[in-house]
Length: 305
Ligand code: GUN
View: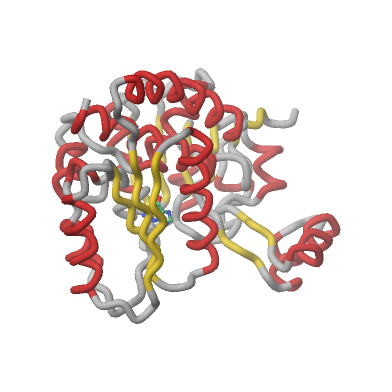
């Protein structure tokens, strides 16, 4: 039997529909939530992400600023910009797109954002609040994964959840959110011994390590829910042939677009082995944007409402 597809676009649309009412209520009181999206450098994937985030603001009637800085921007210059955005009343949310160029010290930049405007939830204050179960800004992608599970009626309480990947932005907060919902949580990473044996225990498997198609059939317990957070770009035909069992369709798409998007989960295997799964694209990605909108509206309500 083929697995159930968890359609991220539909779930994200439902969340954005709900947000429209909250936005209308804020606007009736003269408050338009505002987001500043800061992009440093010319990473093509980051350019698309930031464009999509600003576009989502426009579609919902939020105020937005897209601020693009050159690759050689210094840490000091970025800190100055963040200080200005912190002080600006029309801006409720500040998002600094990652990764930053290597000369910029992200460990100084992210804590400079006012925690109340930290819609990415990456400030140590918000990370600490999440850890200790206090309300705060939660990173968008893991928050979106919880929305997918909840709105698809996939039970979390008591489930064995395995998160592969330990980043500050996805893996660690994902594990905390699942734990707060009473899953039994294991975090795996590049040094995990016998990864297959661990992931095969998972009722809910979240793949967030950024390794294209690493999770093949063997890694998946039959019937498990598989959430794929990875988005890598394949640009070479050999890579596509090495990953897909039937590469004819993907190779056509590669020819047409110059790249294909692939998650951390082998897309053909997951259909056979999983009970439910998020596709790439069209799974977790749309939720990241919907939750950014939600965090921005939430930040506006807390700060100005
Ligand atoms: N880079 C990839 N995903 C994200 C995200 O959700 N937020 C930020 N700031 N950078 C990213």
